[in-house]
Image 1 (cartoon, rainbow, N blue to C red):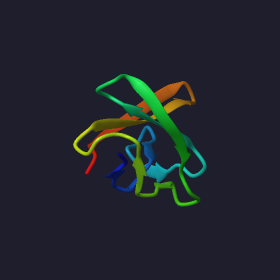
Image 2 (cartoon, rainbow, N blue to C red; image 1 turned 60 degrees about the vertical axis):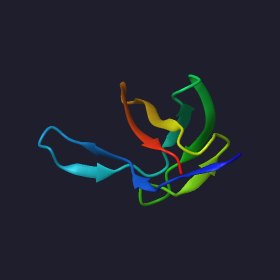
Image 3 (cartoon, rainbow, N blue to C red; image 1 turned 135 degrees about the vertical axis):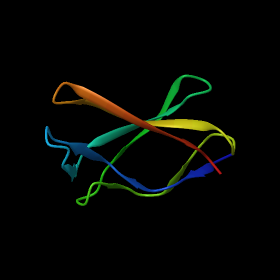
Length: 81
């Protein structure tokens, strides 16, 4: 039973707090409830992860994680619809 997630931009801040988008970055989508990876998507040329769907029940909490970007990692969490 697929459910949907919203689009968002992947950005990073430099030492001055200026944010820039991150094009062509792999983003791992993980089911927080079962602690399993679902799929890996990639940001487009504008740093956008397009809206989409994953195979979890509606109302599931999923985490989008960027791994090892210059030694750092970041994530954002959404509840699917």
